[in-house]
Image (cartoon, rainbow, N blue to C red; front, side):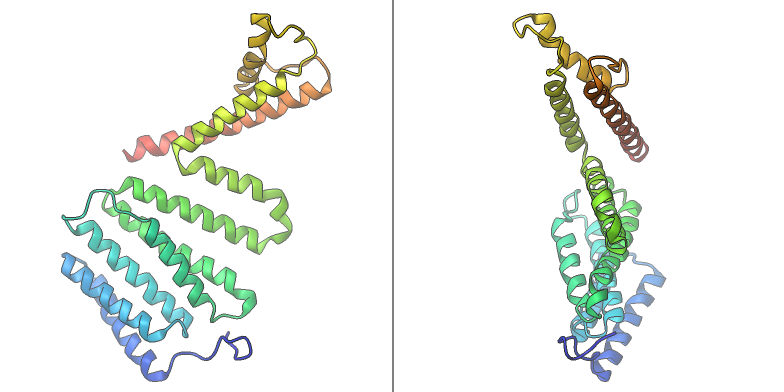
Length: 267
């Protein structure tokens, strides 16, 4: 799993690994008994962090376990501490997880590093989702779910590189739509404006000063995007454009319904 020529080195010294294992066992026993106070969560985070520093990432599987426990305890402490604001900031935590996971993955073989870093991150963030759900932190849970979705798609693209050019735009665009309701709204506006400009090229639109004709492309964009009145005339190009608009509208409608269901069921 590790080599010397590329700088990956050997595993942690035996005494460091033994001490780190003892620290992690103590932290895991605290989880088994349950965390009833902030003090216990902080103590567990300190134990896991000390183990992580002793290992230095050189024993990657144990280091990944220490990193997971560290964030597990820290998030428990943040959610339990009454002096913290209601919304728990996660942006810097997710960046830290990414940085540390990539640092640990450096001790794998070069061809395994990317996949290992993604798997370590996904395992940790999935645990954070369960903790946030336990404390009813809905917005933070959604932020972590968006991150898990990104990691899952990245892992899929990494394992199937020959599908990358076909599925990359679809996967990344779906992440953009599901990340927030405001982004979803922006995407709808862009689609309607773009379709309006394209439908404005219809051959029967001859007088831009005519109010009826000037509003017709916008009406065509709305009706086709919602699947109400597809255009079946004025040449094959507009028929293809109409089909694309209908398919895009149905896809966005399905995403909107699923997103709305999540919002209603969690609130």
